[in-house]
Image 1 (cartoon, rainbow, N blue to C red):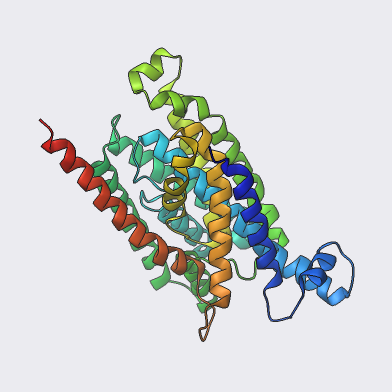
Image 2 (spheres, helix red, strand yellow; image 1 turned 45 degrees about the vertical axis):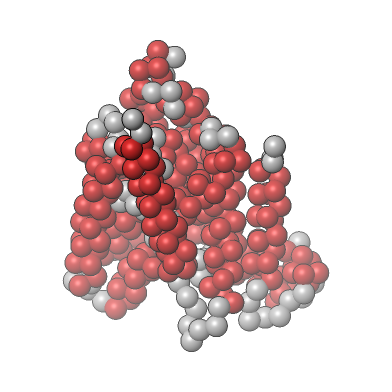
Length: 333
């Protein structure tokens, strides 16, 4: 059996090293490692530690948060199409961040943006669970997610339309497109506690997610409180996704693609999927960020654009495969 954790950890380390080596200032890997340790040319140390390192760390953190929350939501809803972006959580978190920027809360209180994003993400996720009901049917979930996303995008567009100044407008556009550019260690330090708290909540749900694969009644008979499980997953998702969106903007489809790629390697056990998805999400976002810097263009591509270009065809293929599965079951006598 393939052990995914060592492979994913190695892939993530390589992706981070490649990310640190890229930039306008040419650096060999040896120079980059020395600068990372604080040795060598002070200018190179500044470039690596204050510009490239925060970008790489943020990519790992955001990818890990999105990958883990996607796996947890799919396990909770027992639904292969569940993902923070598809069910509206990311759009709602972006709306919360835009509201904080629009009213100038960020200038008055530093954590205002992540707190507003996480609150909006929590409200959207709770509303989705209420609409989807106990069964969490695929069609109901998707339709509710479309409604939540559409409302969040409409309100975000309204805020942009009424933006008081061009600088606020440019900040709002960031949350719509997503980017790791110009991140600092302060941004990392602000987002990390919220993402860590969300990941800790999701990790505590491993036993419940495994039991839920046997059905709600069986899970309840095993001593799992479904109400507490739902609340814990909702809170963990809101914390992790809200902080990720507040830090870098909306980055879609990571939570959908990564669990599907890694699920066969862990024998489809939700509890064994969370950590690999965190590592796999970090790899995917870091590689996508490398791609936006090496793809030739007049200006640097936005991260959310690249992940959507990869994730949207994957989502369509997944829908077609799921639809064929439904037809095959319907044709059986």
